[in-house]
Length: 430
Image (cartoon, rainbow, N blue to C red; front, side, top):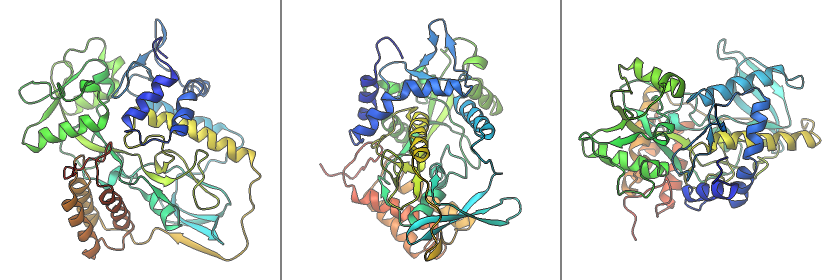
């Protein structure tokens, strides 16, 4: 933590970014647990970057000062995933299974009593009894035409929980990262880390003019919803937006190895050339409604991370709070489950719940374009109504779990008639 920083300042930035829609108790728990979370991660073998003053702290959008730790420059996510997977595989109290898809949940008198898993390589299904199930399946960005998320982040866990009767919260709040690499390719767009702007990179238009000047007091480091909308607006009038990183000094392969490598793959030298960027769906602030312990409205079903919503992010997530949220609330949920007496699987009336029909690839591509145009960084009621009607009357989308999920998002967005955080309505009536 920087000398001019505190948990209170971190909380203030979190709530400001979240448009004061945050659950304040969740925010206080998050920021109060941040230091302990970093020390716990270090104990798991994660080697965070250091400088002469100790932990090297970076700054990203919405933060009033430098307070973010990184591992391997811009490779923090990979470092955390590798270390935590290794720790889980080595833990004696964890039975590690080969990767499988969660296909269905068994309920007994309304309580979780089992799961059906499918081996993605063979298609063979396996049923397991369980009385406590934690969903940590990630977000739904892959339901949008432009996204930084992998194809598996398509809301599948959220859809399954909803089919079981779990409550949904804040579905309309989808965050768009303002700086995905603007290239033509199938699947997820490469992410250009916000740490570059924290180090001094600037967003400029085709003429080299700074696009965030006069738009927000924090300029290029404004909360993501403000920056994403500005980049969107520039692109809607036919221009492109570029991240000018040519002023950044130091060893790029050490400071920003991921960005340096992906730019090289696309023929860009960020030390000498500007990087083309575009907004892309990045994070879902909404999700399965949970309390601070991860309990959903379905007995025996828990959720944590991006698939869950305890209100900590409000209407717009503060940069880098997602990894912190996963660690802090994941550990809290783990502690609660370790403390309770686990229920034996129920023996009453049982039935299986699955997501329902899956959209084919062509229909899914159409749905992704529909979501991008209707629920992108700038929204309009008439366009959302049109998209809602399209899903309801298209035989290839209506009744699919992806179509049902997107219809829920659209309905939530239509019901919130005023702009708030990442939910920006161009047709808002003052």
